[in-house]
Length: 255
Image (cartoon, rainbow, N blue to C red; front, side, top):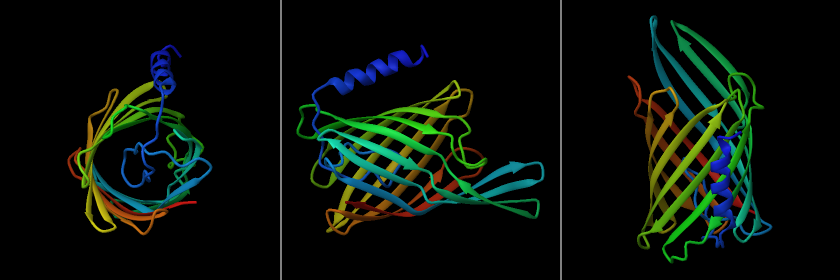
């Protein structure tokens, strides 16, 4: 419990600051989160359609290949001009493991999460900030759950370079089963043409007692209107002997 005291104090201090939300934007896709807040009384639904990951791990009998299909979702509810409630679910998932000429299929439900995001006013026309407090509950089926509740504090600072380019840095600090980890996600968001935009990110994660994890991802976003967005993204893991791959589609709607 003592480990949480400095972190909780820092978050409480940040939330107590005068806050002003940035212009609303969807957090999907990508690992990080934006600084925009869902308008008061409105609901944002962000849905994977679905996401797919593929990984290979070396064993004495050759590579073990795992394919996972998942349909995670996030609901964001505007509470005030600078605060929103987030309800997430890793959703139903399906896996196939191929090893030594055999295939094993499995399916199950993932974990659920509850969080609060708060915008922080930096009194700057181009720079915005938001903090996030989240708890992920290990309610999913075996093989599709983190096994222990996970507590996360995150922050994002974004800078609007010009009309075409936005840069941001997201940081996550997580505590799970007494073990700490932290993740850094520098991101470039750019306008392409018309309703088309894109993003590129680098993810670095460090967990106690484990090797560093790194990955790259990029994607396209099509904004149908102010309320509807479609996206597609791909990613590659850079850690280990062989790369891991991810990809997926998504749709987001503001009610």
